Image (cartoon, rainbow, N blue to C red; front, side, top):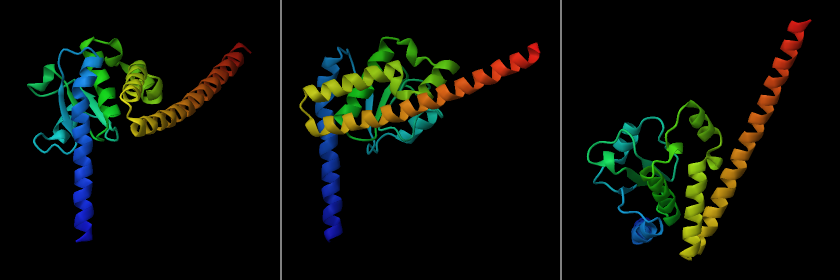
Length: 192
């Protein structure tokens, strides 16, 4: 009986978080000057198979992400609008993903990734131009909306991502130095 009480309370909290996100959809749309919105799916939405969208998107869809904006290889009628999937019901995540939607509608070239951009994105996600813009917008929006708890959490999340990506940057720099030294000594040996 007590367990049932906590399960029901958990469902209520989940629904209230999703309700809060839905309440901010139009505010974020206005802040971004969007003409329309893509299809927005929340993780517990049973009417549409979220896993089908992620599978159709291929391996590029991050399964650990709190939110996703999908815009390629989507089934009709979503192929022209895009789909946002919110796995963690937070206004910051919604704002972040809606910024990606705006970038897509503006045809931001950083969303089209070749091998170099993909490597850059995978190694330095936090510093990738589209991510910087999305993180900045989401943080500013939740700060302006006075969502203080969410703002503090989002700031901590950004700091953790920044630290992890900075470590990647250091490792890549060290590897480049080592490879450069190997090439230098190889060329020096060839001259001798």
